[in-house]
Each structure stands twice: as structure tokens, then as C-alpha cells.
Length: 194
Image (cartoon, rainbow, N blue to C red; front, top):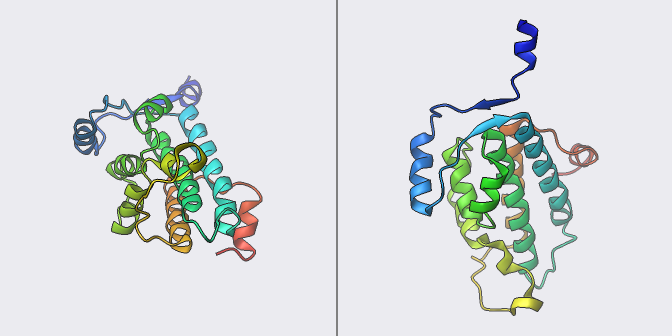
């Protein structure tokens, strides 16, 4: 019978998490519905998939393939997409529902970072916080052929600095979740990647 009980728990609600007060303040500030945190195998699997997708999406940016040296927009758009995937990987891992993330986080990297840090992510340096604000919402950095090219503050970020900050973010997600790097990318990093 004990073997059945050990194997049976698929979801574990997070009761009275140490971050309940911080989350309540964020829910109020952003007028978000409260997130009911529940860690589950499904959430953990989705978290790993999002982290892997973030690493794969970042590979081209990290190599400089997706960066047009004339425009920081491309780098910021791709960095925003990667940051959202990475931060949602953390949120899913601590028990946020994927539907809640989709409805409330959307493309707001600053909000995703705030929720992540409120749940113990511990990546709250001022430069990353400033980049998160610049990236939010990240759609504004892409699709100039659809929305035009309005003057936007890129915060003075260079391609190299954005890549370094997003690499540090991905590394923090990997450290916090314990997810391995995707196959193929792990060899690149140990065989000469930075």
C-alpha cells in the first residue's frame, strides 16, 4: 500500500508558500487573478519543455546569427521571446498553471521576472530588471513591417550585453529547476561555448 501512495501523488498543492505575501502584493498591483500554485508532473514536464525551447531559441542569438549589427531590435525581440520561455519555465516549475501564465504574463517580461523573483528565483539585479522593462512587451521589437518603426528606447543595450544577460537568466533557470540543457547544446557549451 505504501508503494501505491508513493507512486500515486501526481500533483502537490503548495500550501502557505513562503512567498504568499509577495504574490498577493503582485496580484493586487497588476490586478491579476490569484494564482493557485500546484506543483505537478505535468507542470514540471511543461517547465522542462519551455526551458529547452528557450535554450534552443537562444542558440542562434548566442552565436550572433540572429543579430543584425545595424539594429538592436532583432536582438531585443528574440531576447524577449527567450526570456518569456525561461521565466515561464520557472513559474511552471514552482506550480503556476500554464493557463494562468498565458492569461496574465502574456509578453510582459518585467511582470514575469517580478513573479519569478517573488517565488524565490533570486535574479533581481538592477541591469536585468532594466532589460526586462525594455523588453516588455517584446512584440514591440519585432514585426516593424506590420507596426512601423516608432522611436523606442532600447536602453542603450548592446547585442553583447543583451546576450550576456539572457545567458545568465537561462543559467539561473537551469540552476533553479535542475533541468538539463537540451541534447546537443550541452556539448556545444562544454566543447568551447562560453
